[in-house]
Length: 132
Image 1 (cartoon, rainbow, N blue to C red):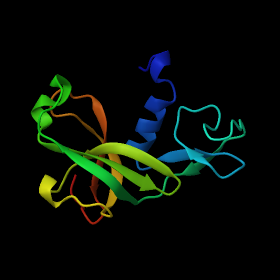
Image 2 (image 1 turned 45 degrees about the horizontal axis):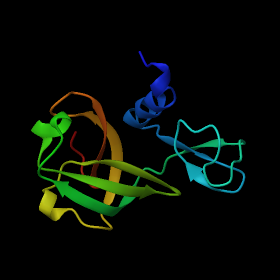
Image 3 (image 1 turned 60 degrees about the vertical axis):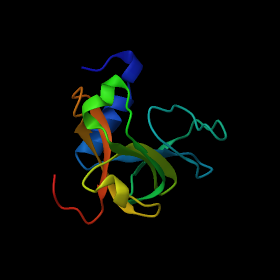
Image 4 (image 1 turned 90 degrees about the vertical axis):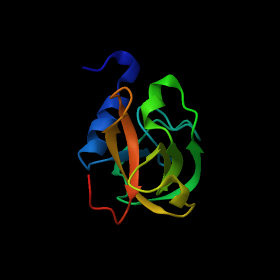
């Protein structure tokens, strides 16, 4: 059960996990992610819900070898920023050796538990990866 601090975000994670990810777009075509109530670029409150593209592209990444305690058992891991159409998601890359992650790699997004805490984490996998 989500509390008010996570309202909107928990629903976004559930949709992403089920393959129905989405984002919001204002009347000026700015994309944003939940739980926004107004466009952060122009303040427009008329937000349309659109499907998140199935594939994104890594725009930057870093390999974490000395993690916070919340990700201790996950290390080493790659945290990446990936563009999915007009929005960007931050997640952990799985299914590929950290040394093989490159800018421009095509990825899909889902939600998987952290190895350390079991908390839900946005997870990227290579777009051609068919494993869970």
